[in-house]
Length: 265
Image (cartoon, rainbow, N blue to C red):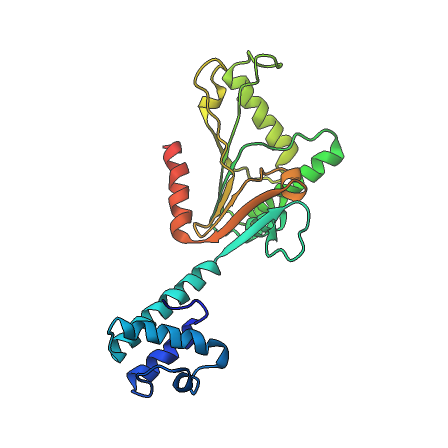
């Protein structure tokens, strides 16, 4: 009934006119165009006429228009707090931000807490590849070393190899030690280390009801949440086609963190 062409400012202006008695029935184009810009005149006439047809008095119409204006302002506020995040080929006219840039900015700006959930990590071979892989976590590691109050928790997938692969019969402890050695030697460049948690179901025998930790997200300071298809690997954040959203929403951030913390408990 009320066109989306009418923004909050136009709706509030119409409400003021109605309340002050400066605009009343019949709501014709000639009467409306004295107060409303030509581009929105038709939408204003349609809205006012529609409200009048359901026998709303001018003061009731003003109240309804202010409610719609408030809703549209709130929707705009919320939409301004959601950003599209993308990895891969550049797309002409895209409004998204680069995944690697977003992650580095979040790592650098964290003040009190960072929670990372990830499925796969780089497995670099050689010094050059190792330095590139470590660069992904460097902003976070530097932030941790500068800020003793910053708490970092990582939730990772450590899985038992397929029976056809080497290491399938190793103990859980041996597989966990291999992961820890590889991560902290090859990927982590800082002095302080994050707390690292894993889902033990991923280490169950392949014949049983196995599961894995596949969620890929980043929560910073209980304020910002990055939900993404990208792993925290160099390829996923710089070359592969990956999509995600960055939310600035304390309710979502705390609710998602609580999900992970409940797994720890």
